[in-house]
Length: 116
Image (cartoon, rainbow, N blue to C red; front, top):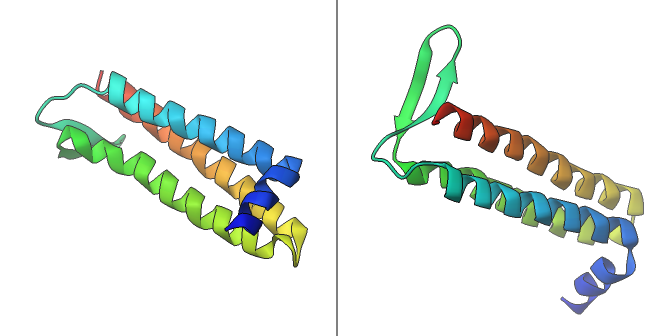
């Protein structure tokens, strides 16, 4: 565990990726908690051909940031594993964490706009 923390502290690119991904993750949580109405049913999916595909309880939208958190933790652990062997692979893993958080932020924004 100490070796993992040392990797995060010493490498500026991994630290930057973690800070960006963590900031995006906090924005996703705040966006979904404060801008999604807490009503019995929300629109969860919309298709331009059919219309509304799926409805569900308001807390179903919280699976989106939980998915981002789990993928972020797994990718960060993989990056820490490969850091001493192949540093470039760990940078790719951390870049993927940031990319996943950006995509989930877009999905959270779409959910907010769909349920306005």
